[in-house]
Image (tube, rainbow, N blue to C red; front, side):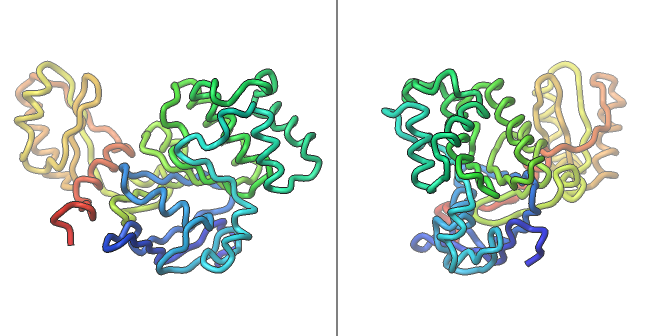
Length: 312
């Protein structure tokens, strides 16, 4: 294992019955990085995260998490990891303080009461310490869940769709906290399908139907895919979209508000098509850097659903 990596696994595989949910998955996560898992629902993100943190035994593959063997030392991994699930999993009939105290007891945290008080203050929960968890809004539940993940000072945070169902401000506040933690050396692995969150990750891996499609530094992913993207602005974009479909060099067309993003891997063919449409003088065209969302859509277009009825 590279000592600079918090996670290093190869060939990680998990099957449920005759379906392969995670298929020979490899990943290297540098210590202190924010690493994003992108993929649609059902792509295997949650199953992979559970194997990485020792909650699920892989059927094949090997590797380490925080220096511990993912197959043989699951118990040791769990003591060093904070895992935030998609669904709020704390006790709704306990107060915020009582929930944090319970989690601290489970981890055998020293100076437990002092640590709980510090956690309340760190996450802005002190004024609500006596409020029942079940009465909290989605954003406050999210903040409590993160506080519970951090109560034992883990080296690694595994966050599974952590901002699903919360408002934009709560999401922004959450990511401010994630960046702060990363600066202190905590490694963060987060699964999401929000592109505005993906751009905040240092590294990204795209997962579709159990297979890794590509991974790398987030800023480099579009170039790795090889996409060229043109933006079209003007009237009747629906008609323009229909006419562009199937034209030379056009691999995908995506609507973004009042613009169309037209992308492809055949840069010369795509430009020729764009110039022909541009010559009509109806729409304004401009070359733009391909983004993570264009790359995601392109990769997903060629991905095959391993749960589809006709899948082998």
